[in-house]
Length: 509
Ligand code: MSP
Image (tube, rainbow, N blue to C red; front, side, top):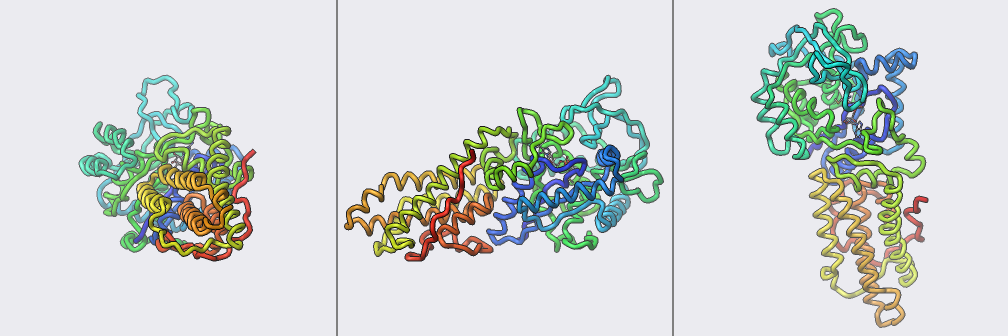
């Protein structure tokens, strides 16, 4: 089955921060999961390179917009490389194949009679690249997200007839599962029920954008241009995507993962644009919460950012991934706190999972010739750990299909907690003193090793490095393409050699 997932296309006004990295890591975990499930995954990410915000940032740093874009885009590419993000397609909205797609799409929308020239007046936030709802008589209003002054605009723009799609959009946004999580639907329903207004899709006095054919002085509004990047990205090469052949390329996307601030664009404007062009709609839009620091949205404009490269150098990828995916409910805001981060990582990864792997492999090697214990008892299916493992596999898979990353990580950790409790209760270190118990100890240690194997596999989408290190400690060195045949009980080969224990995770100091 095809599974297409997208991150937003990030503005290149500044280098990436942890907020944008968060979305990408979450999408990476979901993409990795679907690959392991055997799906043909198309994981799309990229950058949004046009618009006023970028033009101004380039000017500030005395670079041409294109030079500026090239350098920031490169920092995104480097970052995703360092974080081992497994995207399949990276789209730049300045690439020529994207530009030709914008023109082709615009042609379709014009032919549907959905474009007209009109007057646009209002307060504009350059940070959001969006007109805000404040009335004309407001005195110096500011953007609640960026905390910067709004700018008054009064210009001639081309408009898109969003109002024509009122009925269809009402139906689309109320489809169960279209807007996720469910809690975000209400906000959009309210917005739509107030009556959709046509929106402007061109700008004047802005050079850094694609010129609109037939309208000298107009460039395409950055959002009109950027949303189309999702379609351009469907070709993994530099050829323009044929809009008549989108189905063969993995369209419609299963999910656009975005932050809650850009939900309107994705769940209202974008579907209407696609309807106008006669194209299929995305299956769902998932709006996650903001990553905050001291309660305030982390952002490039506000400047309270955490640098993902520094964090990576200080702690490595897995601890940060674990914190973001396990501690923050996907869909809700989460605050990044250094102390909490350290406690969580040391508890979960070092004390619970790390110790479980270390002590179990050490005991097995010591008492069973450096190998996975062998035994003749035929009672695998009666092990409580077997039942726990099978229940965890089911829970993790269901949660991942539901994009519930917290639930799936928590379930894996619980399995490690149960495995530790099983060891504490069975006390193999006491039992082994009596040779008569060797068979039972072998069976029990095997059960725990088997549970560790399943923990290692289940962690692969969330913590790819740690998952692999765990499997290595069991002598499993090759990563399977799909995991279906591995998520069963009793597959660890009895008597197979266990490598010398290597701490899989060191505590953070
Ligand atoms: N360029 C547009 C998206 C176009 S998609 C066709 C854009 N770019 S952005 O760089 O400003 O934001 C990209 C995403 O990062 C948004 O989904 C936004 O919500 C997210 N985040 C920005 N700051 C964030 C946090 N502090 N926390 C979590 N996500 C954040 O909007």
